[in-house]
Length: 164
Image (cartoon, rainbow, N blue to C red; front, top):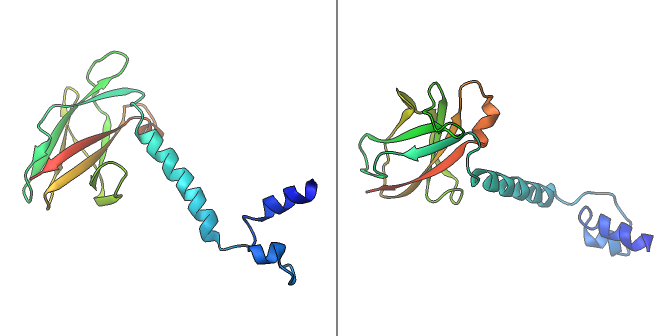
């Protein structure tokens, strides 16, 4: 029984010909691409599930239209509230990334992540320019005052936009 278990454990790491073949057995690992792909798949799946969760510490409300023009200055205004008190959160860092398409589907990020401008009383403005018609996702991360940067993944909300 132990021999079968060892063979099953060895399969992912060695070519089948080396495990079951008649030639010399070489301890040469299979291309790391398979292992890397499996690891990346797990990390992406975990990130997708984490990003689809409801924010832990904040409530994010979109208070402006989510249809914007193309090739001109556009902005979306959001209200950030404390989840426990429902009071506006000030002095938070709101970090935004823009993805072309639905959330976590294309991974076609436009530029780098950037900070939203705090307007006061819990309102934050996200300024951007889009160059094509279509659906976009604003990946919005909030770091409340006094929290570490690690809280940004637990306070994430995807906001859908239509550009036309």
